[in-house]
Image 1 (cartoon, rainbow, N blue to C red):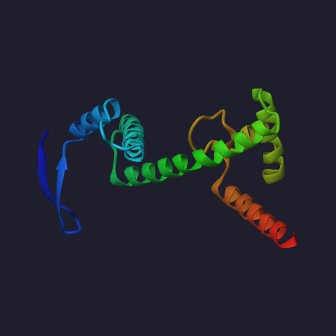
Image 2 (image 1 turned 90 degrees about the vertical axis):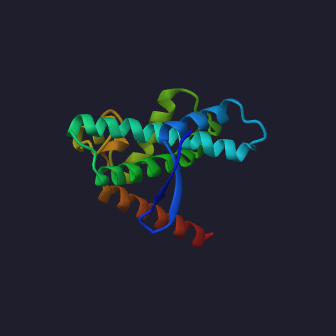
Length: 168
């Protein structure tokens, strides 16, 4: 492993290792954690997942655009963080639906349509037909929700939640 000292933009001195060495080290720790506790192992694994996803998307950007800029990196990091941050919320939602008796894919789809009708006045199919793709898989309706519509829906949800809490 090669460690190198560099001067950061903040004028602090940092010791860094090659990314490939870090990935090797993280892989070794994942396979044979020794005395490393579970929370630290989880962080190592989470970093590896993030690093792999960012690398994959960076390669795709470079292949499609012919370059990968700092602005692309910032946009990608923002998107990845929001995507990863949404996983616990989506898991809570699917757990809730399972508790309500949903077990088949079409039951989840029906609930999704129910939510979309309330938030946007249309089903997932209608969203796919009427709205342009913003990002991601074109078959997933939430990838077509314009930011303004998403923010408006979120605001109305928060307002109704606030009203519900006050009226109890």
